[in-house]
Image 1: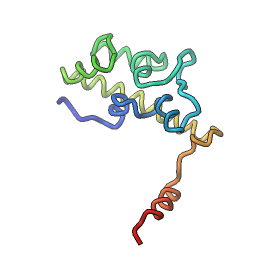
Image 2: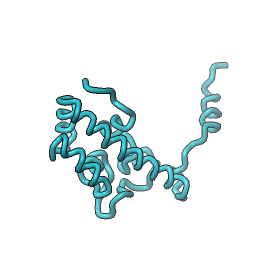
Image 3: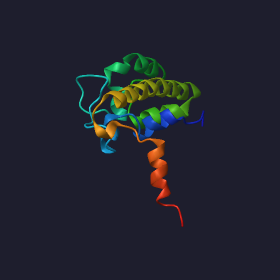
Image 4: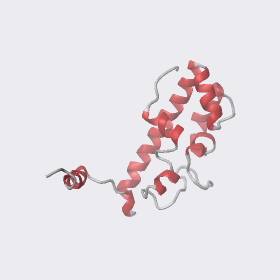
Length: 134
């Protein structure tokens, strides 16, 4: 209503993104823990949005606009309710998720966990060649 959904906002709203729980489920991480704080259990979209201490400053700016209830239904209600709230959520998601993506790329490079390594385009094209019609 007030704007368009970006890739990073969609990640937060869907839970499919740079979150330990999701990455573990798709075998890109060995466990679901948060790499940005040391005292939490699993890294989820809700953890990132409302709990992770690494994003306290961004969360403070967000809660100043949308209020202290950072449950997903409450955030969505506030987003569609005003352009200012929409912009605050987009700003939070863009800032935090870009930092989480950068950290994930760095872990991919430095970790021995086989699932962490990205597939190369060459391997994907080779796999796709198997499914071409004769």
